[in-house]
Image (cartoon, rainbow, N blue to C red; front, side):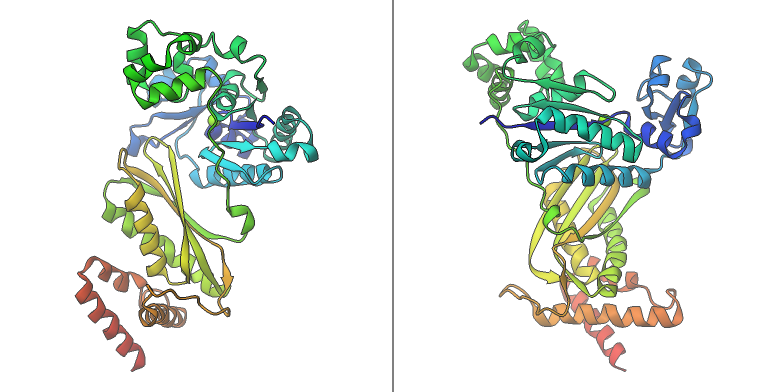
Length: 415
Ligand SMILES: [Mg+2]
């Protein structure tokens, strides 16, 4: 049986959320811009009214205003709200399937192959999702429906806003082949240049090329593109694990200034995990998994997660795990603008802590004890008295000194 894959893309996401938050601006041209002082004010998103006046993403504010004099400029983007809307949309998608693979804050793939007996045809699911999201969130999505991921993605790009496009085995040659190769994921600037040089201009041209020739010209990506153009791409939609563990504790921050180094990210993570750890202690929970989401300065999302061998509750330990995930995975192609850490697979902290032979049990309990004592002091005397940061700073120090510091703290606590 053919797979049923949906690609859902929220239209003009940032601008749409702003209009949903303040309906009084929704009939005006709206542009969401980076703040003038920090980002030299460029347009990050605009609605269709602004687009019709020629405003494009990347315009400076003054240029956008020149094109469109009654432009409503949102110069302080509400990133926390965008995240909230994104999460709400993903919750709606979860009503239909567990197979949800995010592609960014505002788009994702859903594999609804096994949902059709319950909810009807893939097109019906797509149409339903559009109307639910419009009704519950007041923003619109475009949905591509197809038998593979690339065509689903292509479909959501073809008709906007608030539309469903079905690309089937029967019609894909008709719909996809006339499109320029640049419409495909996998055709970046360099690939595009190579293809153009050999007069491969449409997806149809690509499909009719010899696979070996494309491989010769473009390597692995050539084979991938050959498969895509011929409807042979069959990559899986990654399953979201979050559904099994709806309870997660997370905290994220959009930084005032772009982060440019591992160390800056580390400090940010330490700040985030203090609140996470506080919440875990408050609800008497331990985390069995950690996920890290990064939004870079090009506003692309990156997300990784890790299931832990034993559960954690301490801010330092969770920050360390998050940091290791980050340094293993992030390539620093762009500076970092938002860091979000989530803990999941939460279990009650009464349940026995599963240890592995790799854990230093004493050290773990020590760290947790220090943190909870510090928290009690903070509650009693106010947070200025003792901040975790002073302890956490030690993590920059070599291992040997760090251990000494920990034991000093422990002695202090005992006194
Ligand atoms: Mg979008």
